[in-house]
Length: 95
Image (cartoon, rainbow, N blue to C red):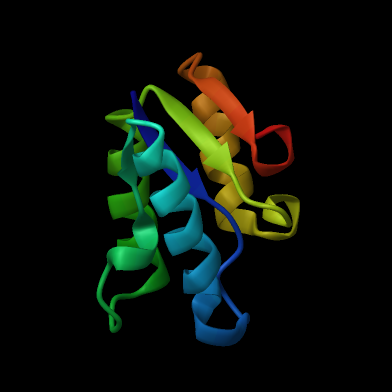
């Protein structure tokens, strides 16, 4: 299964990349393909990051929500799109 990782990044140390990478390793160890926005390069605008992330999400079968996702405007948009697309929604706390 292709799973997009979503969660807070802006304003967090190292943009919360360690949590994204940990989730990516976990999902990969379970045989999934992790679509990890934390692998994107620095230097893009927030609009550009969202464009890329929403495209990644549209390729996914599921969304994996990191703890604290509700505090992120971008993650809330990704969650809403995942619901609209009827993707499987997985919470970090559920695994």
